[in-house]
Image (cartoon, rainbow, N blue to C red; front, side, top):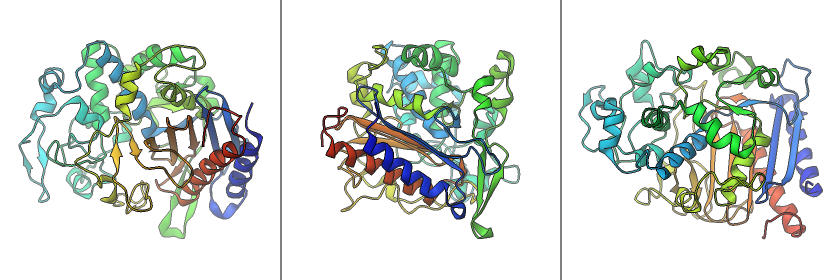
Length: 423
């Protein structure tokens, strides 16, 4: 049973945005769960698209983009637990992916130089291996032109043409690192990444609507992708899907020709994705099915700061290298007092308690179409807000993420007997 106070507050908040045509946000879904996997609030608001009369509901399917990184990392860590992959063995990395031994480092003047340090799986998972994204990095964007890069084409060959943008280990930079981690998993095990995720994560958790290749039922419930054009006074309109090729691949043969993107490849219902988060709250064990998909010590490691020598990594700012893909951002998740920032294995960690009520060492991350999740192991609560709006950093969606997360904590604080949250 949901917490009615949280449910009502979230519904009112989401409706204030989707019901206001000036925001351009057609629809939103927000779901929060406790450590037992029980829903604290589960709310859909608006329609599936600006040009659609179909109401947004809890069965709506979203392209979750970089929220996939958590799933791919969990898959890799399962392989680490089984001795099939090593977090810190660069020789294994190069044996599985000789391309990573030979990859060059892009300089500011457009030249390429040899890398000075080795790449490990851990570095791929904590984004210090040196890869970037062309829509966040002007140097990489310019290097790819006049042809350009498109990381959302599900093309493995294109992935392999991208150079490093930093020397391995020298700094944190968000990029295609976890796509490469997924390739290492495939080559070490002989199993395609999506197949592994389905067998080793989704099936044990009893989840049928998280997949890199949605079936007919999932595609029937797919939300429309939207594009906001800042230069046209914030105009927003429906657009073609940003991640089309996997949606068109219906046969196994077609799917096997595509990159199983550990960085951005999954589609999901938020109400199912939060059950993955509930498993992390519960030390790797599903509170619903009882399946242990990761060891408790592995989950603990995921939530430890992997890059303590970069305490301000998320204050370096994100430039809008491609304005249709992202808004500029001076900082990821600003906090009062500017405490040290942390990064676990595939997600950011807010090491100090947050303004919404979240506890210390909460993990969170996002998808480029303005989806955001968080997992607070201290207080036993997790959640996700989902939209399909480009570019990243939409203030209307981000505002609702903060407001709805705060509503969940406030409701539980007022009714501590409901769910597992202790405030």
